[in-house]
Length: 263
Ligand code: SF4
Ligand code: SF4
Ligand SMILES: [Zn+2]
Image (cartoon, rainbow, N blue to C red):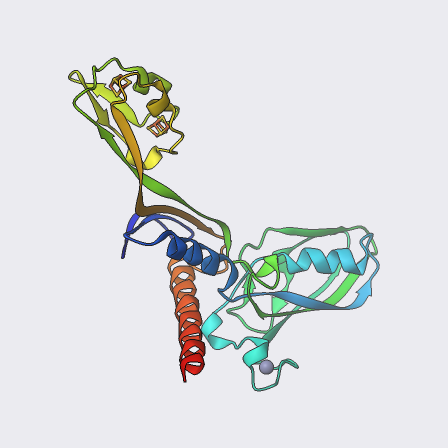
């Protein structure tokens, strides 16, 4: 098994996972989405709210603001020495004390930890009119996407199977397959059909159905093209690494269960 990057920046990547069982490819996708811890606001203490929004709506909005953090500095509440009650090792407070008229943005929160803050400063939270006030403390903690979507570190995490496309000698070069392909995968070059861009193929089989000579074959392989986009809370490589670590931990637990069952 190996990974080859095609495109990569801090927040977006396309890579090929080669020689992997499909069950592993899917587990990897799910692990990146649901098992990598990120920080998000979990509850909000509202000391004063004279805005037009109810406390609950405000709290829901604040919970969905993606936060950047150094995840290695914090424990999951369930694994913390405080037993999940809340301490500086598992939670961070972000305070907001503002008065209208003002459009309040994510960047107006003042965090107790300089490394834990909204990914973007310009996410609108609420518009306050003259005389309206907000005084709140939002408490963020680590969690995983399996618990709540606000903890997902990815906005896109998908894969597709990369096919093997073969054209045999019976091909008459009629060009029908090139015409019907919606993705521009095939090309007629020097009287021969060539595969121009196999990664674009969606395995729709239109080319196979259009070929009267039965000359084109599409087969699934054990290579997968992944597209991953981060919400900004963690860099892509960290999401991949933490996802694989989570899978390894789960496999270890499974091994232990099996050994116990055998003994
Ligand atoms: S449709 Fe079939 S015969 Fe025609 S060019 Fe494509 S593969 Fe060859
Ligand atoms: S399977 Fe569909 S997308 Fe792939 S080459 Fe054939 S027509 Fe194009
Ligand atoms: Zn704690």
